[in-house]
Length: 414
Image (cartoon, rainbow, N blue to C red):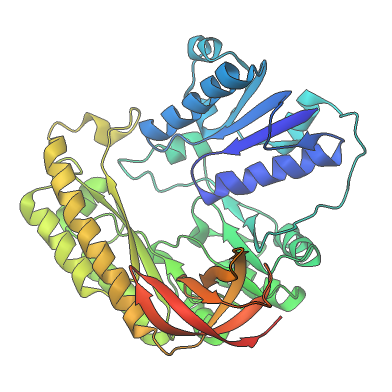
């Protein structure tokens, strides 16, 4: 069968969608992006109501525009969907987890030739699932209710997956999960897992995803500082710079602790790129609370920022808080933080002028403009008439605009 798989939301969802793709190809199905489609599988995200809407909108479009009769919804969105809505969307089957084996069993074998080896033509990175679930239960977050309790993958399974990526020509493995910093299995924490991967595979680079400030250990900092094969980049969620708001969110730290974690990273890891999430307009957030958030972000060496307006999510404690913030105030605060975000990106880019950057080439245009992401998570562009996708190059940044660096090529590494 010709099957389309569409993933919404986080890197973990994309990673699990990739596992479904590999499984279906291995049993003789064809995974495609161009119509016609015999089956469409949507790996939905439910972290916000908007995310749920996007998945449902896509399902409707597949039926309306392409006449797809067999629609499957899997993952977090499938947890909250009722039977009535599933019928309204003409969903044939739901899977509350992105379970590749269960989906493959349901669809059965295809008529094509089964393939045991995957191909990654044109891909420079692969997502590797290391963990699932969350025990934190922040007051605004639905994820623990739909993903369940924390559980970590076997280290040997993770190492095997990274080795498979390397054998298929992928140069960067992105370790991903719901709560990556809580990884622990067979005596290994996240740092120990990374060292095992480095020792037992030849992957060029591994990249960590989101790590909570409370989980930035001295050992993790040492790993980032010492290994050229671990990307100098961390995403460290903040959510608010107000201690009062952090407490209402049930975040397990205060703003001073967050500041200390970021400053330790910045001081000890050369040229590290540090990103953050922040939520504006959380119930009860006052002008003073917001200003504390703004001032904290302004004072920290962050290289980028993801800004979200708080939206009520049914099933979470915060949805029932009485002191909801008006939408116009949320928009105003968001606009201010977006302005600050752009300034922080520019400031970080300025510090990188003349600093050599290792980049895996992702795209090359017809006029020989190549681009990719640097070790410290900056978008880099350069011109070359002999570079191909998946080459690894050493670049010299010479200018920047809106947080993007323009570079000259210094050396072809691979």
